[in-house]
Amino acid sequence: MITLEGLTKRYGGTTAVDSLDLTISPGRVTGFLGPNGAGKSTTMRMILDLDSPSAGTALVDGRPYAEWPRPLTKVGALLDAKALHPRRSARDHLVAMARSNGVPVTRVDEVLSIVGLDAVTRKRAGQFSLGMGQRLGIAGALLADPEVLMFDEPVNGLDPDGVRWVRELMRSLAAEGRTVFVSSHLMSEMQLTADQLVVIGRGRLIADAAVGDVIAGSSRTTVAVRIPDRTQLAVLRDRLAAEAERVEAVEEGLVVTGVPAERVGDLAYELGVRLHELVTERASLEEAYMELTADSVEYGVAVAS
Image (cartoon, rainbow, N blue to C red; front, side):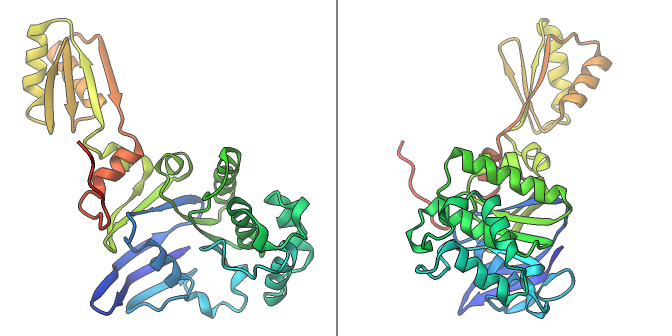
């Protein structure tokens, strides 16, 4: 478990992270989302004691990361796939990590096999492609069989098979009861991988909710209703207007925002309105995310009209 209590980081007059209060629980994949410059990497660095907070605390199972005697056995992390000695072989890189934390060297070959690098164990890490470097970084995170795993953009440079492999790996780790905390800009992948989402913007918490709840909360999630009788359509429209955020009349029906399909169906039943169609048209995670972070983008670009 990861616990953040009032976590704050200031650089001069700039606040990178502003009073984050979060609990990242075990047994699920928690996606960490936010625009560039939102404070995601800074937050992860503070959890790993690579950066010191200006205020607040970051705890791993109730203790700061640096206080664990063999920290790799508690937390495995991939923050930067290039953070290694380029002239060391993949195997030697992991052997050095293993010996520094009392991990049996036999575990090195196990994790190299898990990430699919069996054939290049003697190749220098500096000669690896970006995707191979990511796999080596994941091997390092898994090395000491930790209870908590943190990954910053783990699918960068991976082909579609590699992306699917990472997705399945994350979900299997969470299913084993581990805490899995993953930062990514790939919304479609997070929609498939994550159970819970933490969204920040300009260092502040915007959302901490299940993926389905984030999507359901988007104004782009609507209910489409098709009604053959125009008189009945008007009756239901007027009744929905008292509860919905928006009711739009379209050909042979309505598009309703802010009221779930179940409620629309119940109202139609109460009013004796005959329905030919009642469908929830959900937003994608990308649409919900863009709506959530619209006021938090610091490095946006103009969109051509």
